[in-house]
Structure formats: C-alpha cells, structure tokens
Amino acid sequence: PPRSTLFPYTKLFRSQDGIITKCISFNKYKTEYYVSKLRFSTRREVVQMCEEYVRGVVWVFDYYTKGCPSFKWFYPYHYPPFMVDLIRYEVWNLPEFESDEPSLPFVQLLCVLPPLSHKLLPKPYWRLMKYTNSPIKQYYPTSFNIDYEGKQKEYQGVALLPFVNQDSIKQSYETVCINHHYRNMPGKMYTFTYDPNKVNTTYKCSYGAIRRCKVKTIKE
Image 1 (cartoon, helix red, strand yellow):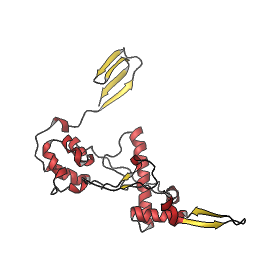
Image 2 (cartoon, helix red, strand yellow):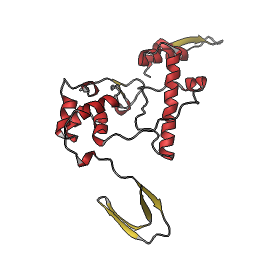
Image 3 (cartoon, helix red, strand yellow):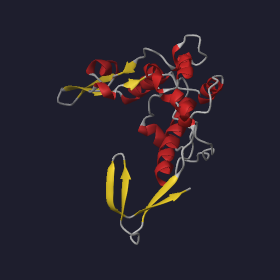
Image 4 (cartoon, rainbow, N blue to C red):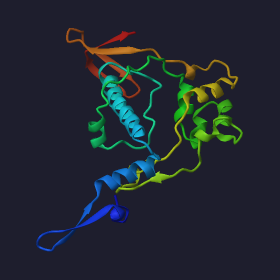
C-alpha cells in the first residue's frame, strides 16, 4: 500500500546503537483491513471468508481436472483473507458443491454484462438493464468505486460492483415474453481426444484449417 496509507500502522524502534527505524504493525494493519474493507466485526466472519476462499481454490482445481463442480457458486467477497488466517483456522473440511445446471445464455448474459452492453441481448431484455423501475436495476450501476490501494497499474484496481443474485435475475428474465430464440439454447457437449491411429484429415473452421488433424471428436 502507499506510504501514506501505512503511516497509521507503523511503529518506531530504537536499536542498541540508537538508530530509529520504522516497522509496520502487522496486526494493526490486518485488523484495519478486515474492518475498513470488509466491515467485519467478529472472528467468525474471518473464518467464513477463509472457508469460501478455500472453496474457490477447490472449485478452480475441480474445474480444470474434472469439470465445472458448480455453475452457481461464486466467491462472495471483493478481497481475499490473509494467508496467516488461512493457516490458523484450518478450514479444510468443506462440504461438496451442489450439482446444478448451467444457466441459459440470456440469463448468463444478464448476470455478467454491464449496462452499456445491453444491445448484446435481444431488445425485449434491454429494459431490465436500463430502466430505473427494473426489479434488478441495482445490478447495473452506471458508476462504481474502484479500490487502487497498493496497486501500481489502473487495471489492477478492485471494482466494487454489487454481487448478483442469480435467482432474482432469472425471475426477471422469465417476465419477458419472447419467442424461442436460437441464441438462447444450450450448446452440445463435445470431447476432443488425440488419436494417433486416425487417418489424416483436414479440420476446417472460420479461424483457419488444421491439416493432418488426428483429433477424434465424441459428442456427449
């Protein structure tokens, strides 16, 4: 963090040689971090945050090794816990993720798009993102704070956006009457595996051709 930010958390130490040095009071800074950024007031809140953080690590590991463990789970904080707290509370015995189904494409877009990108959705859905009387308008702020503390580049800032309630988004989505749209259909699942015994073929697509392709495609 910037020097001005750390000033309240510094201590003065005098060595035997009479040299005075400054040192950060880690405990004071950690306490201020949890209080000012996360509005925590109890240890239990820190423990819950550590649990969710570890669940996030497990989610990423499962995603890349087994497949998406949950389509609805999300990390419900803008900031991570301190590593010393992850070690101290030993939050390793966590419940399994509940299996669920992916959202329809339009519901997913309503969950992630900023208001200026509303035209990526069919026109009947625009009012959900633009109109002030929309029941989910709070999820599409036109301005928001960005926390740059300790950052050196603009893109490193933490965007303090509201967390989306997917159930509320889905309820509002269902109030819009629109005919079945080809863009709102779940896609097919494919598995691509390398097959050294496959006859050389050329795979063609809009991005270019792959010659001598030995990838086998299996539709699930």
